[in-house]
Length: 150
Image (cartoon, rainbow, N blue to C red; front, side, top):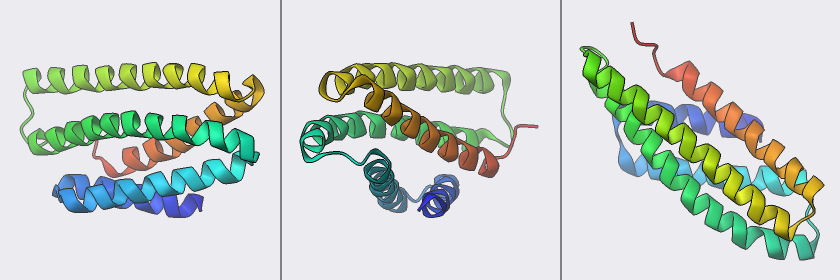
């Protein structure tokens, strides 16, 4: 399953550079489905936990997808200006990248609090570790497909 997620992320990164929006949406949906499957398998929720967890996770996923859209737009902007990037554009791209990272951290903290109110804290920490590992895999795959600025 992890390999399937990595393949989807690889294709998603490639699609960003070719700017095929409909494919990006399909792949985002596939990534979300795989992420949910990984969480389900790793967390082994009781029925009671699942009833509390999944509605909150759905809210998280909606907000997270908005950040992914921002990141996709950032990658598109980077790709469009890659060949002849000036100082001002480079500065703006870096600034936007940091803003997205801050928003991702704030989102993570916000939902850690929400999840910990519904499932015990040790399970919430486990969930956070799983989400972090998935994010690390995604970031590694993106990094391997996006060329470094020269």
